[in-house]
Length: 151
Image (tube, rainbow, N blue to C red; front, top):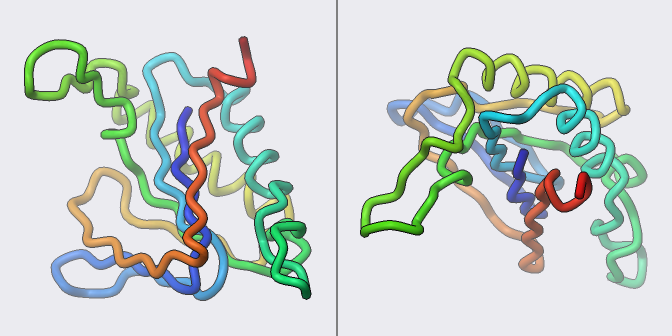
């Protein structure tokens, strides 16, 4: 499982020009699920996300978690995080998870963030073509890959 986590001032997702969800200060998470991911990866990444200390404290230092600041999270499915560029010029997405199974893990990830105590967790629409608007704060962008923790 891979997340591209961006600390934001605001973010929103639109389908056909219509806003379907939006957040204020917090994280926009682009979530990629691989063919081998399980509940274990979901639990690991959700816990890491909720407790990651990248929100600014009163001195502007990255020292607080999103739980401590009451921030919000927008989760967007992003199968292209598993693009394989090793051959040719067109990416292969064979490492991306089966859509039906990936959607279940995507929904589980959102539920785990809510259970962790995140004030507001919303999402895009799994598998849909979306426009994602992000106002990055910092900018702070962090790649979290469950394979790095499970070696």
